Length: 87
Image (tube, rainbow, N blue to C red; front, side, top):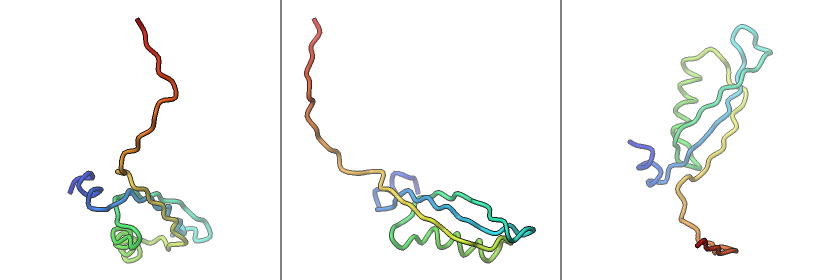
């Protein structure tokens, strides 16, 4: 499904910063940025990714910070403060 169709269906561009413990050095944290179209507030695509992470990758999750934004919004109208004309 294309990004435009997903946005029209209510999906938002979602970004998650995932902090995880390095497998070889568990006291060190590494950051991973994940970005995809997802449906707020349940975030099913992000939950599927995190389930995959926990089941298949060695780095234990520390924390996940999520942000999302609606990219397609109703247009806004504003009036110009100045009108200039050139001859």
